[in-house]
Image 1 (cartoon, rainbow, N blue to C red):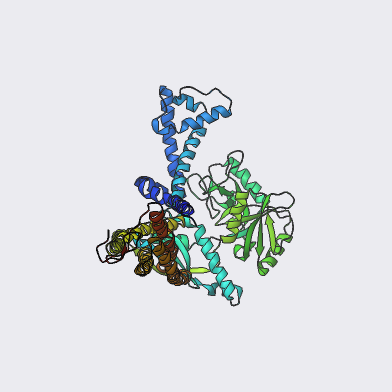
Image 2: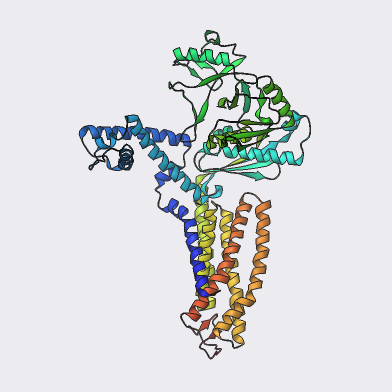
Length: 605
């Protein structure tokens, strides 16, 4: 391969690495600390903050419009939005954008407030996405909480009255992982790490400040999913009652309260006994991805009354996927039940054709389809958009923990320890790299400069790839970095020592370089391949810190081979063919001084 193509490849690699690394650089060096904190809060907090801020800002614009002033400087993002609305309505666009002109683009104050809220929400969610793309600090660097959850498979075996197979145990653990991951955002702060540990344990890391009791409540929550038959007559009766008593509220358990939060006796409401039915709200997702109760055309909250008796427990669902209806092309959710669940569901649906069946998750109605026919092991639920269908499929797959989890161990790590370990880790990393590079410069002289450039590029490429993989930086990962730098230097040492042997044979600079790299190739590849195999096994069989070390080491193997054999060779060839260099120095005692190839014991250039 010619030098030109190799240079192009190198530039492409560096360009791609720059793109990989940019989110991390931008997050830690260009995003102010207060904005970083905004991006690390929960969706509920984002929602509350955006709504509160939007209410304050719309009042500022309103006051500016009354006074005939311009739009406040920090709210000028409203001007492009207003300009687009003027154009959509085919109205003349104002030449001067006063606050009044901006407000006149909207049909109401509420519409303008919603535009401000949307802008803030989009801004915070973009920061949240950027934070997810950046390299994160692990538990040992930022402090936090680590929890080991132990699966109690005996509870499942007792329920099904039989022993579980290895495949069934593995499936239960995988589904438990999905459930826990679906609850990630409720933790707030930085996102936790949740992964399998061994055959029957789940390891959870939650970096940053955290309340152990609150987190235990979240990760140990049941996430109960169930199918309930809707009571149509009771639903109509309750909605008529609600029309004349709009200030009543209903909690998640179906209890009814008046405006003063006093319980209302079911006997005063036209409903069957409380032991037979309960009132539940119908919920959907808002712009923040939060559950919100839906409203009807009259802006009234939507409620239905369901039978308390569970028609089918969600633990019988084995799988749920989104499919396309072959007739209409619309998305639908197809679910598959276990054999036992299929029999239960068939008896339920066969006896209640044309009646609504509520899908209830944590006492919130997520869907209310009508039964069209008896369903045994497979069924479909229709009437959703693609996104709604995907959300429902996720609910059906991961709503309930398929296996009981108990806390096996829990450990808190203070933030001060995190700061100390960050500082010590950086000192170790920088000190190790500096000593290695200094040795190469002192011992191999001008060839050492080549090695230093290659090692700096190696470090840059390795960190960029880890950034692209959303890697979590831990102390063992830093150790992997240092070890990789040492291994990459070892490759340069092998090459330089081979070159010294060729120089003693009286070969020219170009021949020495070609022979040195050629003869060192398999020695370097052998050592790196064996290291990569070891790192691969560590990453697959290990967990926690061991896996972090293995991942950084395995990526470092690839980047070090690339820089040692590709980049370093390119630098030598560029100096030989482009800069027409005749001298070559690889130690204090061996050098090529000119084209006549003389060996010398003198100090090299």
